[in-house]
Structure formats: C-alpha cells, structure tokens
Length: 421
Image (cartoon, rainbow, N blue to C red; front, top):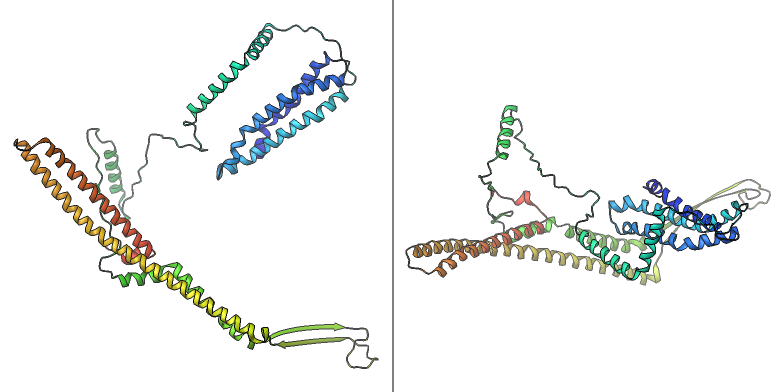
C-alpha cells in the first residue's frame, strides 16, 4: 500500500512546483529582476499551495481512526501520501525558488506587456471578480449547501470495505443420511426444489411454532450431586487447589532451607613459579580445585522463623480463597436449581391460565352469539388469551435461561446430564 500511495501522489507532487514555476514566469514580465520575480511568485502562491496540501491531507485523516483490517490496509497508504505531499510542499517553497534564480539568471525581466486573452478567459475573470465581490453571500450559501449535502448522504454512506449486498438469493444445504443411494438423493433434491417453487397462495409454517422448555439437567439430580459435579469441573476451583499446593511447597522449602547447605565449586590454574609446595625452586604449573559447603541461618534464626510464618499464612490465605470459591459455586448451583423449580411451576400455572382464558373466550363468544353478552366482554375475552400466552412464553424463556445458567455453573457437562427431550 505504500507503493500505491506513492503512485497516487505522483501527479500531486509535481503540481506544487509546477504552480510556483508558472507564477514565477508570469511575474518575470512584471518585475525588474529575476530575484524579485521569484520572490513575488513564491509569496503569491504560498497560501494557496498550503491550503491545497491541507485539503488533500484532510482526506486521509479518517484512516487514523480506523480499526482492524481497514487500518492495516489504508494506514501505510495515508502515511506515504501525507509525507510525500508535505515534502513536496517544503521543496517547492525552498529549493524551487533557489533553482529558479540559478537557472534563470541569464533571462532578463521585462516591462509589463499586454497579453491578448481568449474571451473565455476574460469571462472567467469577470465571473471570479463578481463572486469575490459577493463573498459575504457566497460563503454562507456554500457552507449551508455542504451541510445539507452531508446531512442527506451521511446515513447512506457505508463504512465497510466490502459492504453487504442483497443479491436476492439464499442457499440451501441438503444432506441425506450416510449411505443413501444416489437415486434417493436425487428424489430428495427434486422434492426440495418443488417445495421452493411453491404457490404464492400457500403458506409456509415453522415446524416448531412455539417456544418449548429445554431440559438440560435431569430432575432427579440432587443438589448435593450437582454441587459435587460443579466442584469437580470448575476451573477456578482447580486453580485454587494448585495455589494451596504451591503454598505448601513453599513452606516445606522454608523449613528445610537451614538444613540444606549451599555448595560452591571453583577451579584455578597458574604458572610461572606457582607450582605446588612451599619451595621457590618449583616452577611447575599449578591446578587447584576447591569445594566449599556452608549453611545459612538468616538473622540468627529469627529470619527463618519469620519466613516459615509467612509461608504458613500464605497457606491459610490460599485455603480461605478456596473455601470462598467453593461457597460461591455452591450458592450459584443452589440458586439456579431453585430458579429452575420455580420457573417450572410457573410454566404449569401459565398453561392452566392459557387453557382457562381459551375456555372463557369460547363461553363469552357463545353468549354474544346468543345475544346475551356485551361487546366489552368479548374484547376482554380476546385480550385474556393473548396475555396468558405472553406469560407462558416469558415463563418458558426464563426456564430455559435458568437451565443454561445451571449448565454454565456445572461447567457445561451436557453429555453427562442430558436427557431425552
């Protein structure tokens, strides 16, 4: 993307110097010296070139706020274009004027000459002069039009690199049982195609038209069994056990530290009169091997005692955290199981309420047909089944949520506790 950014900015890089050189040639006809012409040309184009550079850089500012793949894709391009344009602006403002004075030193600046202009150029000059004269009206109108355009298009502009396109199609994956003959598979595919080309007057219905309770944990499980299962599966409890074991090993190390010596091994070699013995005439080489063993007792034994007490306190803290984790897991299992039982009772009550509401609707409707009831009674009897059905759906949804919560508390042992639905 860096090379792509440089390729994108090639034309813009040349424009900075081109604009200034053209203006310098224009000023040469109006100035008395080359240096003055270069000065005027650079001074007149400095602000316009700066604004043009800032406008181009503003286009790439949103790339710095992108995340993920779009940032990795466009961030190098933005940096390449930005630094290239900034460098081009700096060189066109510093090096180009110096080179113009050096290369155009043999040219002579002349007096102002009248240059014939094409009528379109004259018309454009008059138009620009009129716009500039009405700038206090043109600028607010321009800003208002830009704001209106942004407001109308901001909700329709996508933010994805590859936006989602609705192609007006869908895919169906058909899989028969393993070992199915090719002829049977062909018949199944033809039946599916015939079902897709159904008559518009026919209605497609869901195979499961209502929300049903899901039983992930069998009812016969006791709270003690579920708690034991959760304690054996939860990873945070296993972590607590390992921390307790680590604290015990630390205590053992502190207890045996004064009894285990520290051993230092060393070897040295020497020559030129460093031979063995105390005789000066021995000029042989010398090779020494040393071994030192020492026992350490920190602060006359008080330090060892303090280290052991610290290790014992770490064991106590680890065990307390383990007990707290066990209590929390047991509380989660008990609360969730209680919620499951309560939601199951609520489901039964909701079923009875739905049946009673339907029976009431039938009776009220029959009374109205016989001219004995009021229309308000029919309205109430119509609303009652809908309300009872919503309560039933809510009870089933909460029951299923409690089932999944219990599974999470047991660390998802579905294969061990699932039953046939």
